[in-house]
Length: 371
Figure 1 (tube, one colour):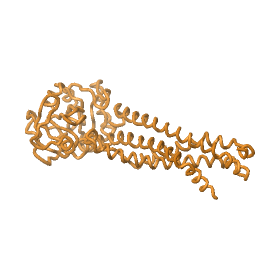
Figure 2: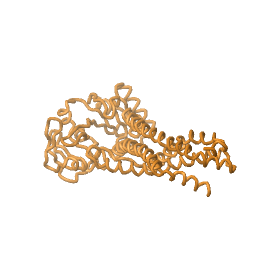
Figure 3: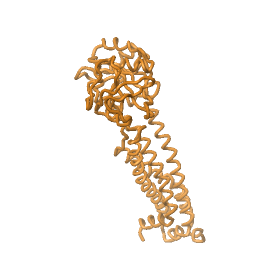
């Protein structure tokens, strides 16, 4: 009987206990995959949206969380006068409950601003002007709300006609309701206010000049922050909070897995006192006994991690299809996250096995054989 056979036999000697331990680990890893995958997916969806629209600099006040605070629309005129600003447009964006959808992105955009340019009409038409009481809907938003061209959609206390269905070339854009800025300011009670000023700089503008532009904007208006589009996710307080919450919640589930593996390995050591004594009597080194127990716990972690990844991937796929998530983000199950989750699972197994391994190494052959 070789070393690996002893490891496998000891794990499956108590199949019910081993299976329950695997369930505990897999739930913890599934939580990591699901929660971190959602947070990472939202970040990547936003980055994709900014890239599609062609935004180079975003001016906002992100201290309010995921959605920034509103500020005076009049800032746009001063910012447009600065060097290295090719196009400047304003946006008022809010997450609102729309009819049967508990949360949906509504985007009021400055009429004829460049943020309209990437929208491709797949059905119907665009609004005629900034005063027409009409909206266009992204493909996913139309599916979630079951709307077609000519239908009426209620936003807050007012009603608007759906005149077009558009493809925004990103999940966030396709999950949004889009209308002219003055209409949304009026219905939302934010007259004269926006929460984004989007800037496009001339082609071939180097990074240093873009940084200088951001510094000038912040010097003019200390109440807002100007950030390169590619740095929005990394510098936003809202995204940092979401990331921290996803990991902290996952940590609780992982701790439960640690306790489960430790309990299993301790029980295994107690039940195998006689066997360990024989191995010691046959000349096994104590460090080999420690390695044996750690291998068993690491394999438990590895198997639990693999099952957890499968469960987490399934959960992400289900959540992606729910009305609450659909159209807002595209959950991310990257290879990096899978490897990270597997490493966490193996680490949980090893850490959980340290104390049982130490206990097993303290046994003496004579005492173990008496057991």
